[in-house]
Image (cartoon, rainbow, N blue to C red; front, side, top):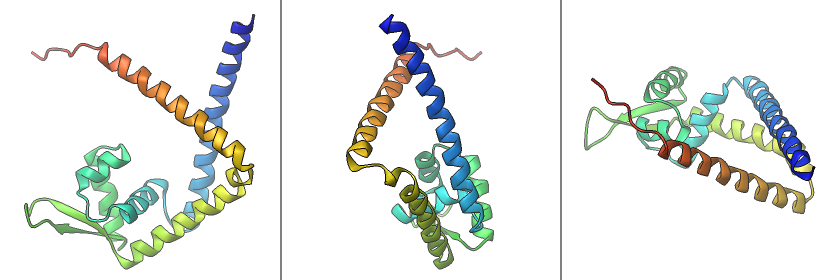
Length: 161
């Protein structure tokens, strides 16, 4: 009986977690729109505050998106005057991505928006509950990673003909 209850609870928690993630994304997107940014634009700008001068490929890897997606996004951010591409000395065909002063200001606003949302929500929980939540998130992340690794290891490459 306890196993059935545990499975039912796990299913309930899973779907609550997915709904929570969706609500968080909506709240963030709404607040970012108010300052003229989309979530993907915010991701690029805030990533560049930590790793300015990285290549488009590195940026795409950090954001878990394709090079094609990042290229179009950078085009729009460049037209808006928020980022600039600079040719690298090693290979003139490669570009390093930098924030402009306007981009740095927009990233600061985006970070402030997120910090305010965190303070109004998760930040209202007692410190020990946040620590417990973090421990559970890390444990869940590790289980998902292990599951994906097992799943990937079990696949055999399809021969192309």
